[in-house]
Image 1 (cartoon, rainbow, N blue to C red):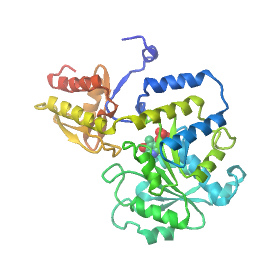
Image 2 (tube, protein in one colour; image 1 turned 135 degrees about the vertical axis):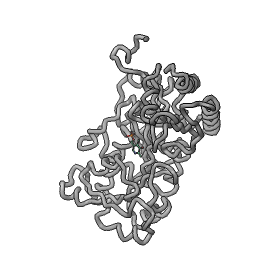
Image 3 (cartoon, rainbow, N blue to C red; image 1 turned 30 degrees about the horizontal axis):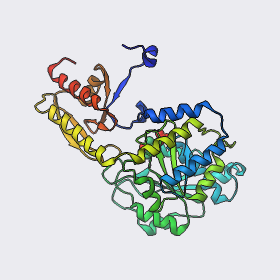
Image 4 (cartoon, rainbow, N blue to C red; image 1 turned 180 degrees about the vertical axis):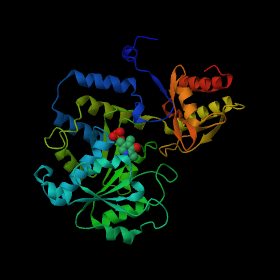
Length: 375
Ligand SMILES: *Cc1c(COP(=O)(O)O)cnc(C)c1O
């Protein structure tokens, strides 16, 4: 075992066959991004001046009015909730009483409730839950309008194509965007894992989001502790007025010059990469693994599409034939090197998005050696 930084701590290195899972490190920064961060760390600068330059540049290249770098999409949601409350009450957030904040509501569809929505409640605002997470009575436009009242500070929308991780039961994005526009309520769109496609960086705002949020540490391959907000200038000005390095709640969401420069660099590279080529490469990886496992007595491999985050990239579904899926997952974790793949609804999934070329072969041979019992 090489004496690297993880080995010295006795921490196991993993091959990420699961996709952009934050709990195992999300994604890998390129050497170009790492070099940009190291360069940023060498000098002192005025953070406000740097923020303004980086935000303007990101807004330009993502074809948006404005942009903001937060320390994660979840933290960005908290800042957006605070900005929406401040705008509704027409007062600086730090001057609002607890009662004033708690009287504000963020409208959310029950079909969109998820463990990240705590960020919206972080300010003390109340969630107004609408509809059900099933198809029995999907709220229509009239129903949504009825749910918007004088205390509604914002509408939250979890973005994602049909067939992905979100349950049925939500009206379409277009309907919700119309309601937000007609009622003059900010529409906060959680698109944390919604690249690819990279066009979502401008399409979601073009279709009516006041602000769209993306995780910097997922497929954008920026710093793990970074998030991207794009959207309307006025709204993002309110976010800027609350966010770091201001005191008040924004001070909890520190973004350093390394993250600012790192995320800018990562986005520039992301916009330049060939998305179609990458999707084709993923198909080839899927085919290579499926072909390599043909005739296996341990797993039945097939192509699955889209992936766990509803991204348009193929992955491999592995149905265990002789053991439980949990045991299969454990056997891969115990292989050398250790491989992490995700379990969903009784099957194990291998997502090529986070695998480099030789790692695809490592995963394939680990799965093949399950058959021969050498693992
Ligand atoms: C990952 C994710 C987040 C959180 O993003 P971070 O950048 O890790 O804070 C929020 N919402 C959804 C839907 C996500 O998938």
